[in-house]
Image (tube, rainbow, N blue to C red; front, side, top):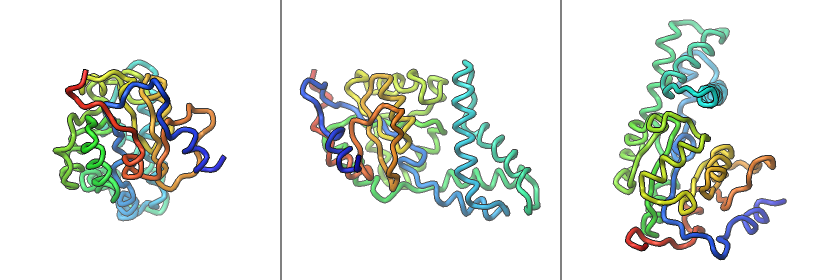
Length: 247
């Protein structure tokens, strides 16, 4: 199935669907551009291509702890993961802890993808309540959105430290929608990661997948209600919403 065929199948509301009242946005890689972190790896003497491996490991460990019924913050898992990877990287010298701190310092300097400000503006103008829900640190989300000049457009800026359950656990999505006083079926989760879209849909939200250059969505996961290349394209394709004062 081509991407266009997928969009025609999954890109429209169905009769009887509740009106969308809220948009829940993932942050890491969905809103934020992680590409500069590759340079941070290189500055420590590690290959830049190690960045996706590190990030995938952080997610793996967060998922595993949630499945086991416990919790750890993103920052702690990110630091532990970096120390382990850098210690195993041949050809580099220097203190592992200093290198990890240098790489993690880049998280506070990331910028949003170029399409994000327009997408946020369009979503807000449509009357949607906007909330971020990240497996990362919500204070970093505040800085990211402030640098983009769009922080004031959001109704809530949240992270999994609130429910102490990493996405894709359903408690994380329910925590997000409760913060803006909507039912799960009245919200859409927007993410670049298929596992996040799938998790949200299994928790009762609708899902929107941002491709950002990717062409493959796993067949084993629930298919997104909407697919778009970026946030601005998605915002233009979502149906109108019931505004906050409507019953």
